[in-house]
Image (cartoon, rainbow, N blue to C red; front, side, top):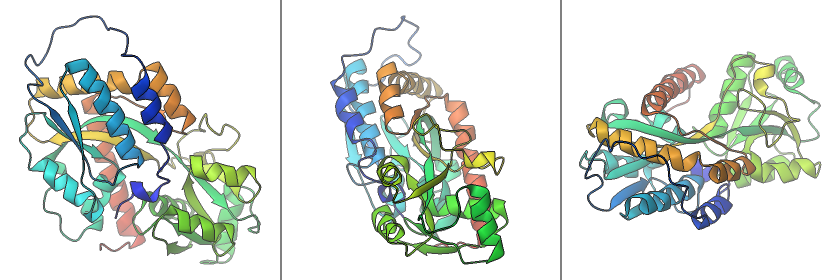
Length: 333
């Protein structure tokens, strides 16, 4: 399942053009080169999604800035297919010298539970390197649903189990898992209708054929402002700067969190000094003020964490969603 491409493909369209057009980042204080001689040749960033999606856009922005910093071209290699499995397998089979990187997302973390057999071991063969950004989703309902907040929606679902029909961008997608987490934590039963992407799901929600769905903020917000959809909550732990008036679902269900993330990983075995050099430069690029602001305008938050922090986060995501997938009875494809 191709989770990211089920989101609106224009999520970061403005980002790549604007950030890559910016002047080179201001020179930072010189520090000891932890990996002298690296990189010694062009680098490759494998994107296991089709071009133009958020993963692709972020990869191109980061790649362009790394090329500026190091004088080595970063080749963006789009390898969609197999729910990110094709591109991920290519990455884990590459030499573990730091010259091959992989864009990772929630798809990478949940595939061990959603794919019957993977040609690699996600936990052993991949090393998370740095988290680039988080992007929360927005829970919206059709105006005909008599619920103005999360508590009222859960009350409706409890009163008539299965009567609340939610759409998603596909089985196992971010939007599906977020709704299942809502039902799980809210102690309710809702009916899932998967679509082949977010756009057809949104059309059916606008037409009142389903009750609600989680959608990416940027393409969903115009429908909310036009009064065609009602926003009940965001899936991040706290309110987002893009929609400060919309409460976080966690305000009703403490601990609720279901965000999309966009990160970089390398094959296991890359020397620690090389990983440290990659992490530091990528984090510097993604947290530069202009990049951070452009991400905010797209409804996303720049991260740029340490390798240890992203590894802990990624492992937590794997265990969190594996547990939910088991409890919800979501079957692998």
